[in-house]
Image (tube, rainbow, N blue to C red; front, top):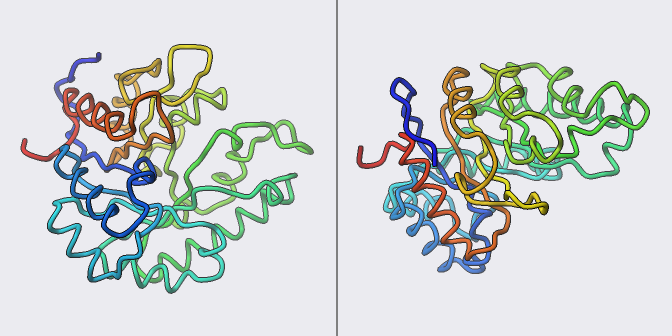
Length: 268
């Protein structure tokens, strides 16, 4: 367990709702999960889907649960084909961060593919900016691997090197950076000022190197939080794809630990 450090900004903590997807199979489950997130002490939520709720229904739910939106993850097919509808919905619920969470393998098979994706992200980012939204990219581990026909470069090099920082921000996932063989702290420092939100998940101590609640694994959280603080990060967002314990318990452990380190604004 790390201890809170005086002088570090208090940053709000959201939960990426993908973590609780097994509890959100229908609108009532979706509503119940969001209420539980607020009751645990999270300051906000980040979306991976909308549970079939209309924008007015979602806005009312978020207000009653005390968890404003801290972004949404939107698939490339929607970003490239139905962006206006996605922005309309998110504008109505009060969210202004839109993130691309994944790139299909066939679009990243070589350098040309990566560069085409970067160009598309720039275009999406321009359209988002023109409507008052902030657009960004969320990584996994595959972006850290050498490109097949340009082994001196990685996908992340291309995506962040060939996009305009004013159009495409970065939402780094510290677990996936470590899983990809890079140093999360070094990445946070390298792209400081371009990172409004970081994804927080931990890595188990065992050889599986799989998901763990924040503070229950091997990642260096004092250094991660210090780098995030120095870089002006606005939100920490907990996400856990799977776990050894029930997911509701995992995300409760994560918010408990983050709050013990001085993060989270609720009831302070």
